Length: 155
Image 1 (cartoon, rainbow, N blue to C red):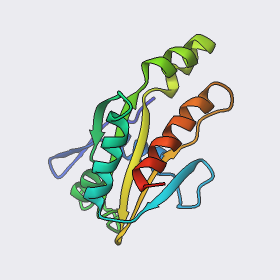
Image 2 (image 1 turned 30 degrees about the horizontal axis):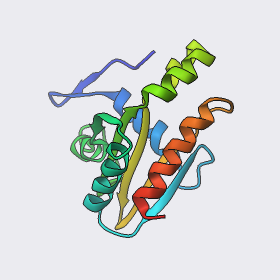
Image 3 (image 1 turned 45 degrees about the vertical axis):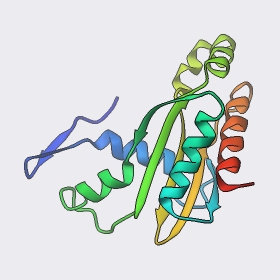
Image 4 (image 1 turned 135 degrees about the vertical axis):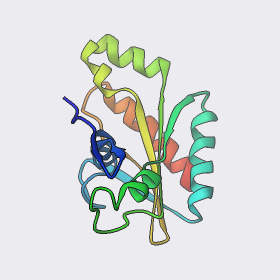
C-alpha cells in the first residue's frame, strides 16, 4: 500500500514519489540491484541521448518523471538535509513484445511494468542506469535496458 500524501506548509508532499525514486535510484551508487554508466557530457545531453535510444527502438516513452526537480522543490517542506541531485529524470516506457512475453510466462509480471531508465547528475557526474529484474524471462527486459543505457553513453 502506498503512503497517503501529507500536507505541510500548504504543499501536498507525495511520499510515494520519494519511495519510487529510492526504488529506482537505489540506496547507494554501489547498490547491487542496479547498473549505471557514467555519461561524458551534460545532464541535458544525457537525457536527449536516453530519449533518442528509447524512441529509436520504436518504443514510446509514457512519462518522464522529473524526480530531481521534485526533490529539490520539496526539500524544505519535508526537512530534507541536503540537495540530492543537480538533475534527475526517470524515463518510463514499455515494450509491447517483451511485456506480452513476460506476462504470458507469468501474469503477475505485470508488477514489473513499466520499465525505467534514469539519468542523474550529482555534482557534475552524470550517470545513466536502471534497476535489475528477476531471473527468467525478465532478463530480456534487463538486456533491453542495458542496451539502451549503453547506447546512450556511447558504448
